[in-house]
Length: 532
Image (cartoon, rainbow, N blue to C red; front, side):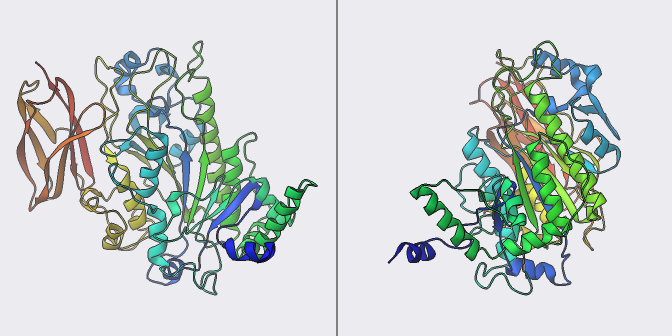
C-alpha cells in the first residue's frame, strides 16, 4: 500500500478537519443525523441553539458573585482578596448579591432581562482534579463512575442514531455541533462516535472561508503536512456549508480586541446567522486556576482574575448584541461553567485553592432572568477545608435545557443520563414559559424555613425537619469538603406535608454538616453543627 492509499484508508473524514476559521482550527460535530432530522420535524422546535462557554481551570465563584448580604463573613474568609463592598456591581431585581466590578457587560444583560445567575452548582463527592472534574461535567456522570460519552453527544445520538452513516444528507446538511478553540471534547462524544466538529483556531476559520491554508515548511515533513491537508480538504464534507454560512454574513457589531473568547463567539454568531442548523456550539477560555496572585494587593478589584472576568463579561455582552443585530437573538441561549469552584477561605499566596460548587450563568433573550438560589453559607470561622455547599446539581441544568430549550419529552431527557441520576434531576425555572408548548414550571415552595434541625448544635445525632410540596423529595447531608455523607430521604410524597428524619452522627467528627433539601424546583441548604 502506498502512502496515499494508507492515508486515505487510515484517516476517517470525520476526524481530520484541520480547516481553519479566524485562526481557530475547526472540527465539526457533524450530522445529518436522526437528531437533526427529528428537530426538523414539526413535533419539536428546529432552530434553537445552545452555546456552551467553558471557563477552564476552576473559577473562583465567591469573587465572581459576591454575597453582599453576608459580606462580613465573606470578608473574614478572604481578607487578602475580598472585593470591597462598595465596588460590587448590583444585579437588576436581586438584593443582597452582586457581581465583580469588572463585569459591567454582564450587569447590563441582567438589566436588559437577558441573564440568569444560578448559585452554587455542583455534584456530590466533588473531584478536585482538573482532568477528572472536567470529564464529570462533560459526561454528566457521578464522580465514582466512568462514562465515555458526553451529555450533548448522547442527545445528538438520540436524534441521529445512525450518524455518521449517510450524512450529510438533504435533511441535514450541516454539522450537529461545533467546538471552537480546541479539539473535539467528551461533551459531544456519542456512544460510538463523536457527534461534533472542531475549529481549533480563529486563523483556521478565516483560512477556510477565504480558501487559503497556512504555508508549510520546505522540508520532507512539510511536504507530508501539505499532503495530509490536501486529503483533509478532499474528505471534509462540511467545509463548503461552513464557508457558505460564514460568507452569508458581511457585517457584525464590534467585538473587544485582545480577547480570545470574543474571537470565538464572533465566529459562533456568524455561523448561526449564516444559516447553519447546528444545535450546539462550544467555546473555551482558560486561566482560572488562580492559586496565587489572584488579585493585586493594592487594589483587589484588579489583577489576573479581574482581567479574566472582564474578558468573559465583555465577550458575552458583545455576542448578545451581535446576535440581536443579526436577528437571531430569540434562537440562542448561552451557558457558562467551570469544572469546579474554589475554597471559601483564601490562601496565604493571595489566591484560592480547588473547591466544590460555583455559580453558573445563562444568557439570552429567552432565559428566565434573575437569580436562582441563595447566597452560599459561609462559616463564621472558616478553615482551609471549607467548601461552598452545593445547592443545584449541574445535571439538572443540563436536563432542564434539554427539556425546556430543546423541547424533548421529560422521559427522553431522563434516558440520556447515566443510571441512578434520574431521581436527582430537577426541572428548574431557567427558560421563559412558552418557549416549548406545554411546558409549565411546577410550583415552588415559598418561605424561608423549609428545612431545619433540632437539637442544634448536637453531639450524637439530630432530627432533620423539612416541608415537602409532594412528589419526589431528596435530602442529602454533605461535609465541608463536599462529600456526600448520607441520603436519609429519597422518595415520593403523595401530598404536601411536614416530616422529619434522624441524622445519626455519632461516628462523625465534630464540625459543620450541610443538609440539602430538593423538592421539585425547590432546594435549600441548612448548616448543622456537631460539637463534642
